Structures are given as structure tokens and as C-alpha cells.
Length: 132
Figure 1 (cartoon, rainbow, N blue to C red):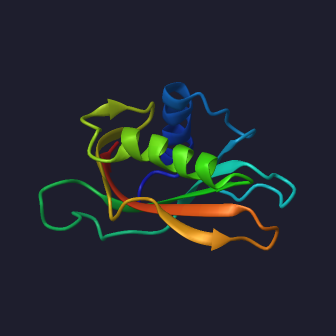
Figure 2 (tube, one colour):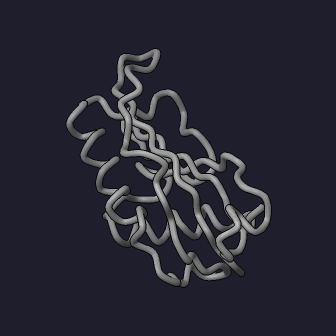
């Protein structure tokens, strides 16, 4: 499994790229309170065993990006904004304690429907390959 700081470091990198603010509308490793209407969340979802898919990369790691918003269009926009930075864009990005070599989305951001408060939700799953 990847270094426990990887998600926080990745969130910091994304915040610098996207303008999202950590612990305001970008959350690393935990769901914000239900009252938080607009949020992008990076969640650890396990992943591949060390060595990944046999492609010589070190440490396959699964990440879910969950975006909820009171506006469908804004939830979609943020999902695709993050997708644009993560999907196949990384080539040895120094995150601090870790280096991200590649991120591959399993699919495009997907609309999940509405949560219990009627907010629009999108999800994108990624495989990250990193080394520390």
C-alpha cells in the first residue's frame, strides 16, 4: 500500500492546480460533514498488489474522487477539472515525500445520482503508480 501521506500530498498538488481549497471544498481521506454541500473528496480505495499490473511500475494504488455539489453542472465541471490534471498527466511529479509517476482513470467521471440531501454526485476511480 502507498505511503499514508500520499493522498494529502496529492490533495495539496491538486489544490495548487485547481484553486480548490483543502478542508473547505477539497478533502483528503475523509468525507466532510453532511452539511458541506459542495465538496471534492479523495478517498483511499485499496489497490493492486506491489508491482501493480506487471508493467514494471512500483505500487499500484486505487483512488476514488467523489464530487458532490448542489449544481449538476458544477459537480461535473469539478470532476472533469480533476480528471484533466490526474488522468495520464503525471510524469514524476514530486508530491513531497512521494513521487507520482502516473495516474490512470478507470473511466470518465460518472454521474452517480443524488445523495440523501438531493446533491448531484460524480465519481471517478483512478489507479496511481508511485514510489517513495
